[in-house]
Length: 98
Image (cartoon, rainbow, N blue to C red; front, top):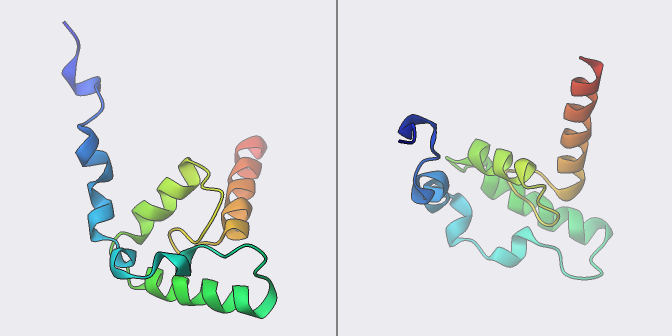
């Protein structure tokens, strides 16, 4: 018989935090840049998305999920694509230095 304590929890338990996201009521286009968007317009859009993230009760869960799955696009957990890449590189550097 399987050791139940070692099995993963129900799927709903793994994702339920998303129901509490501050972004659920926001315009999703705010979190993903349109093709060709650059410079100040891109920064302003990302900062507006991050402002919503800063009020979010599940910011940490969202951020860790986006880092775990290596989310390639958008603002997740208050981090842009470039910021997530930097965090992942920093974590990889710490692991290799250990």
